[in-house]
Length: 252
Image (cartoon, rainbow, N blue to C red; front, side, top):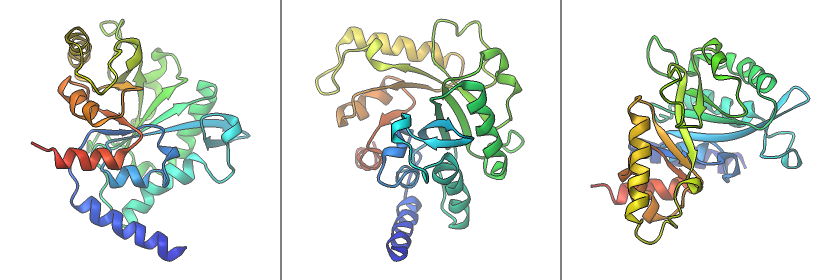
């Protein structure tokens, strides 16, 4: 087993050495065969993890029925930051962990911060502009409390109706559900009216110089090509390695 793991890490280092900056968002990353590392080998810029607070532990799961004792936020997503440094494994220079809180906002966030403190040297530091950002999604505190968070912590804003009324200092990205705006199936040509609707949304967000993501987008090669053309900053995918290979092959 140790030999298999070592071979895998060596392969990751080789793949990573020839990688490129790709705005891949590894959706529900904890469902990958090897969480964190598969997305990292694809040079993903954004990695999503759902967390549930239970008995003073942050478990990685979508619902309580899926909880496993060894699958914690610290084990699967914070420790790999230390391990990647030990392995001289280059992560995406703008890597972010999108932490989707499935339990009560304030108590879950408090424990996220407590766990992150031991890994601060790997997290975003405004003085250098380097380090991994933690983006809080799902259950979040009121926007008025965002500025009380540590410098490495940002938030996923999920509305475009109030962009002219909020402060963007702690907004890491804006995210919306694809299906509420677009019916495109990711295979045929996107209808002109839907294309214009998406362009209008992305332009309204980019006006404030923050990245934009749709979730629940089609996960097809046609979508991987089209979404960046529409100004969407992340390719939301359950197949980060396939997307990476596709983008490298089709790089203009």
